[in-house]
Length: 124
Ligand SMILES: Cc1cc2nc3c(=O)[nH]c(=O)nc-3n(C[C@H](O)[C@H](O)[C@H](O)COP(=O)(O)OP(=O)(O)OC[C@H]3O[C@@H](n4cnc5c(N)ncnc54)[C@H](O)[C@@H]3O)c2cc1C
Image 1: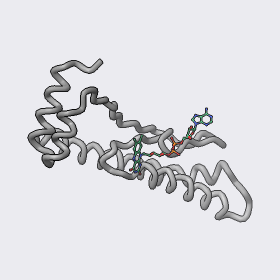
Image 2 (image 1 turned 30 degrees about the vertical axis):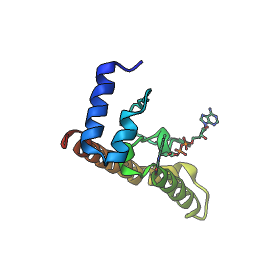
Image 3 (image 1 turned 90 degrees about the vertical axis):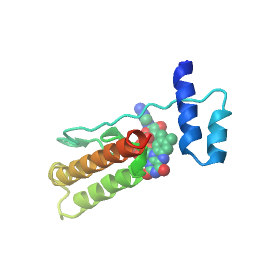
Image 4 (image 1 turned 135 degrees about the horizontal axis):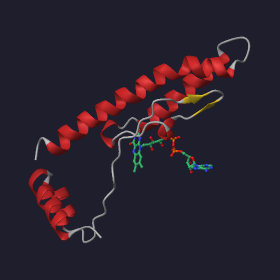
């Protein structure tokens, strides 16, 4: 379903900028697939006693290779925030946990945008 012009453009870029063997692989691929890349972020991750984390909250461009680390960090810091006080206070724990996780998600999002734009658009 991808237009021939785009496929041809992709192949000529691959031939021009990739190491020869990878360039040939792209050129000889009859039906290349395309994966859409989105930047997703949310203004809030906690909602009273409920939260969203990992890719449900922030989706990064692949250039960061940090999606798993981000999801794990969200989860581990949430567990720490809940168990750090002697009384289990889920609402307070979520409130304390949220700001740094939003900051982490936004920092990684902007890093991904910057890496992606630089590697994909500024060098061709
Ligand atoms: C092709 C590809 C390559 C990637 N490579 C890397 C990489 O090299 N390094 C890196 O750090 N990150 C990489 N990522 C990103 C990384 O995979 C994600 O950031 C990470 O998996 C997010 O973890 P998560 O737990 O938030 O979500 P997920 O891993 O997506 O887990 C969500 C889970 O919820 C389940 N689920 C969905 N809906 C429901 C429902 N209604 N009920 C019950 N279960 C449900 C899903 O089946 C899934 O198991 C890559 C992603 C893709 C797509």
